[in-house]
Length: 609
Image (cartoon, rainbow, N blue to C red; front, side, top):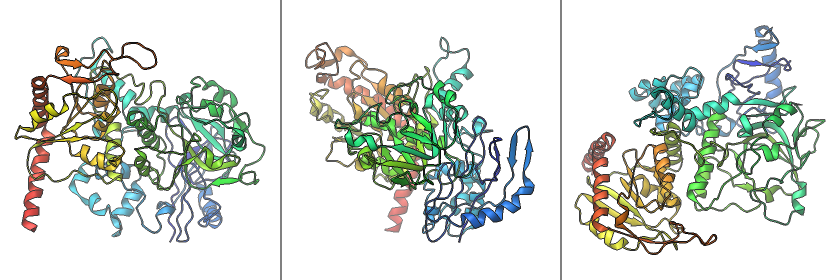
């Protein structure tokens, strides 16, 4: 059985064909997206694509049939064609075997998702096989039925997925409290996604349904394209490792058959740096004389939706999760169809190293296929039917490295949604507890520097408190990342020295406290990340009660540096600060709600036994 979606759309005068396409947003033209499913398989079109040659799902016959039906609904005025197209049901083709599997979102995200795709919500509510049918019928869902992420046109503050707050003063930063709230929303919340969408412009304009296309946001921070060619033939002659290189491509080695707005593209070439924009690659974009896929110039055609990623340090959790957060934000920038969160995608890492990372499991949140790299396609001309160049980890005023967060604000809905999305997809759950003791996790470093010299003494002191359940962990290579997340997710107070492991704060419960034992003279890094996530932050308060092993010197610059030594801490002061964190957790309304729910679950389980 085939179910397809055809919707309303406005397009520019250059389009003279009737195309099935997704809803518009204010400042950009969305290219054609047509999705079908049939039992024989085939991949769905991703962002702005058309059906693939393999498993076209009856494109020609459906196209011809629909053409006759929609011609009378077309109005042309002021150089704009308005298409009013029919039919409403949509299922990505990857889900033919398991309908609705492509959704796979946390329950709290479903109201926003279905609000964006109401025809799918209606279909699911009426379909007994839909796993979300009971959720849609629930009172909690109905109470949030008008919910929205925050970047949609007409989304009010009241209906946003989550509302940030600014308890700190705005004086000296902006003119009013509302300006403070709005600034934070644009800097670090779904307002950042909204702004990328509003800034997006066509760089290469398609002239017919199967034509190439390219559109990008300001400074080429986010781009998406259709039927594009990338020529990697020269890479077989490159002997040096390729990472953070800006010369992977040269003139004419990236392009498409479309009307190129060259001056517009050149105007955005202001952030030429490896991890700040796609300018180093797109400055070489050229107009091809003929459509690349149809003319057979491609050695490889990537059929499924693709993400090309320029990643930061994959060995470091803080930096690598900048990649993952921006990839998640890019899904929202690109969310024009119901399959936007599907994992039937291809990820290509823009370097010649085989991808390896302690956090590699996180890629399973976004793709169910192996990660490709530049070696995979060296010596070949590769064409992408649908490709996204996602937001980058070190953009100027980007997320979350280089984020200039306004003072006094916290709790980004974008960061909270990212956390829930990752935990849901990796099946990390909050577990039932046998008692009401606070779960305290101490992250022990096994590195040369920033070790806690009297760790045993500190642990022994707080372990004697009957209200604490204390554990010491080392998040090394021998403990799988998903298991690390399970520990973190069930922690109330997370303690550790300054270091990338504190990035686990992204996955703490909302009532938790991050206790950065000592920030090593870098006070903003994890404090700001905790603010973004909406997690309470605490650090050492009395410098005279922390005892460095030595002065600490940078190994390369031979200058004093607090991060390059080890430390001991006053035991009594440590106990006092843990008590301060405990008081915050125990007084948090969400923690009290959790304890009630946990007690009810424990009683139910006991009754079942």
